Image (cartoon, rainbow, N blue to C red):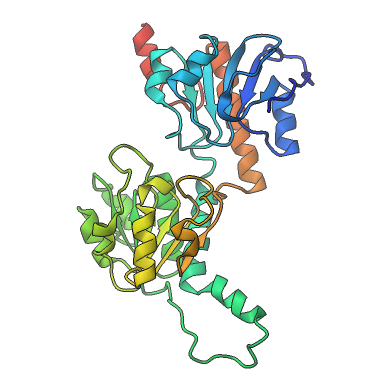
Length: 340
């Protein structure tokens, strides 16, 4: 349910601008929003009744969908949609551009935290940390089990799907653990980037990457081309015992196919920070699958990173309202050329 707008805590040129959020931030972060704008929380971005003034900003905190219908429901008053995150597949960019609405996101500031999460998932699966914790708490364990074995990252091949900012950061961290790096993306990376990753091997096809990697980390964005990128056909190409790690989007994989491969032992493991939907409904096949680690989309959830993300999201709003260049916007160039 919507809550009443907060009174602005500081006077500024944007202090009376009404911002609609799909979810509240933790208290310290929410205070930063309320210091600059009036805010109202409305899950799903449903226009709350009785607003004191027309809303000009949608601030996407929890990835509720922003479609053309959502924008139209506000009567054409929305000037900017600011996304709290780098991925914006839940926002219809074309609908924003058609309506002259600027779209902002928060790249770069979450790269390190998200890469750390990829390593946390990879290492937790490789060294069976979750299983080991459960076994250590089991009262039936009376002596150390010498048959307990796990995988070693050193000497393995880690395949990165999408060698962008986050993919590169994941690769550098895996390299530090003694892994060899392979990667797949549409175009080969520059020679100096490959060299910086221990002469990383470019795999022209996804099949080649899957067939040559002990660990595969999905770091690509979710688009019409990459949705369902990993299905049963791709899973069958992976090395025996290989582990799939997903820090991109849940929709990159066929989750039912992954669950079935885990049940049948055809996939060594799956570790993911993202699902489709989020959270998964009770009884979903992945929740029952063995050798599966799921975290609730917390890759960027460190105090330092979330503050930096909000700072950038608010800077995007302020710039858009002032008619200035936004620090990070996927569609401002398209809008500028449209109105030129």
